[in-house]
Length: 383
Picture 1: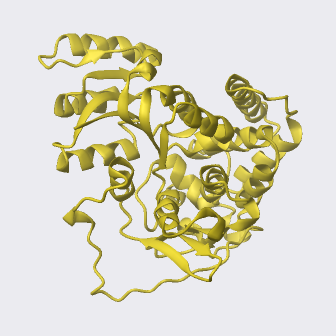
Picture 2: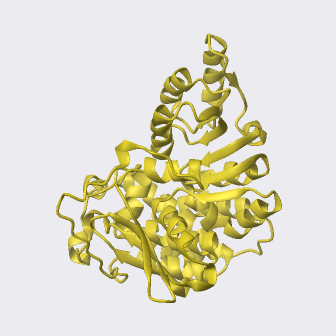
Picture 3: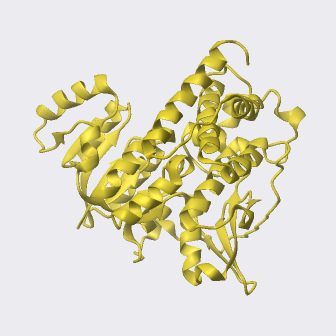
């Protein structure tokens, strides 16, 4: 039985992981459940899965959690959020959304044998530091994002020097095929109506702007050591092919499957083994159509910006990610319009001066500074 720490247990990926654990209780022991703010759901999860430890990022709610655990009959202990990083485990699932996931991801590496990474921002902000830390502590890194998980599986068909290109697929989101005029006044509700995946709000907006795919391009570069010029994106509305690897002999290996995050989570938890699960069976008895299109990077500018920042320096990537997080939050609050998201990111890239970044601490400090600048920019009414 392997021990498992879950950061982001109340989020979309965390809930999918716990749903999977219901089917595989005999294989895993939950060492830690960690949430950000959703204490009510965390309490329910604690009662059901009885982890050894539980924590929450929100300082005020931490007191409530501690009192709750003290009155429980089960033996789950409260641990402060930052102290939880040093709990040893066989596997750590990093599933906190956004840049908030960087510190738990990075600081957990020395204490876990395998990092199951769903927090793409850790690689976008600090991929070189995460890779170095994993190498230093001999921690295995397995991606959970469906696209990178698919590439990880497909790469098993050959060697790195045999790879010609990586092809990341994207559903295109709810606005695939639409032009600028049609996008000027789209609503939050329309944006969150994803055609194929059930995800959290932030990633659903990112999917609509194609920023999610842009961040995944950067993540793929650091995960697999492939040049940006060899990482391609194709719109695949059916979301059946989750990504592909093209080899130098002309062969293309892809991973196909249902649009259920339990599948890549299961792969990350059990790798290199595969386990039988009826729920993931794919029905080839039905008519199947697979379409692939080039993305419209002039209408959906976020993808173009991500390639540019990926090829730039680490400061560019920090500004890209942080400005996007702030813009998405303001869009969800209906303070800015959909098309203003990439405009705001581009404006911040032009405005903010990059410091010299040498350590993970420098990344964290600059990330916070960029967020504050971005928030002030919106509040000032200049945008």
